[in-house]
Image (cartoon, rainbow, N blue to C red; front, side):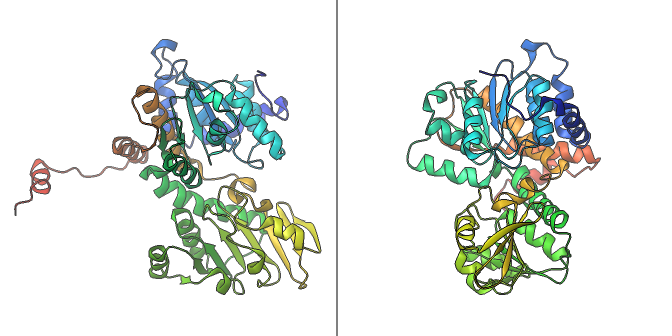
Length: 420
């Protein structure tokens, strides 16, 4: 096994500066670092536990890798998107002795080769972002799953894939649904995605959002954040949905609700965040305005029909960095951001550090839980415990200097008694 595969180890100083910046803004992970860094190796809670991660290789995730390592883990990591790796950050981790396999803009073949290289360290715990790493352990390389005690999944898309494995009885080891922890989805999915998607669109288009019509596909927590921020920027918002309850939510939150066919002629910017495929197809695209902007905030590049665009367009060209223009047969041009990949990471820096501090604190405690419960969990998708959620929430409030009330004994008795 080679120790790492990065673009240029000489970029490590630049990457280290980026990691130092987020460290200063991630107090929960920093507290874990300070708690475990000074312990003797055998005193560390993850001593010699092999952890393999498939994550977006940028400064915040790199800091998680470092904290896991400082807690005693032997860490190997790879990317979870061919465009989200920051080469300087990968170099910084490699320079510190962490086994990292990720290069920005790598081919799909190299992407999966790097996942395989990461797994060849024979992990005890896996941390996945989207399900490709766990998918390889269940598909191409089941031989590497024999040492796995369990894993953690970060995304809605990944949880959907895990639930499918559980339903068919194919899940080989227990998985913790980190995405479903309250300290993850209520903040990461909503506020993190809401801000980072618009950060990407604003910095790459240099266009105003006020006065435009934004169409948001889906109304889960990520889409709620995207719609909320669009409205705050002055846009009119249309939501498309397949779930009638979520559609009612969107309508009561003040947004128009339509089918994608109905919304197609009205939108100036379309953002899909569903976790499903074929959400925006050529049938919809041909109805759109000239110079409509298309973006995907779901994990995989299947929500917008990129293949159809490539086949149907008379020509394509780079309109701006991270934006490809497609000239259609009807004379109109549509603008696709980041090749239809996860726009906030493929064309920007991802979620804010303070948000990912909470998500990665959940990841750390979930990994620690798996190490402490080796061999005790069934091979299914498990929820993160309420105790972990509450602990992280209290630590976050403490970092802000915020205090909250507690129940008195009389109040606890009242709430626990059914009698009036």
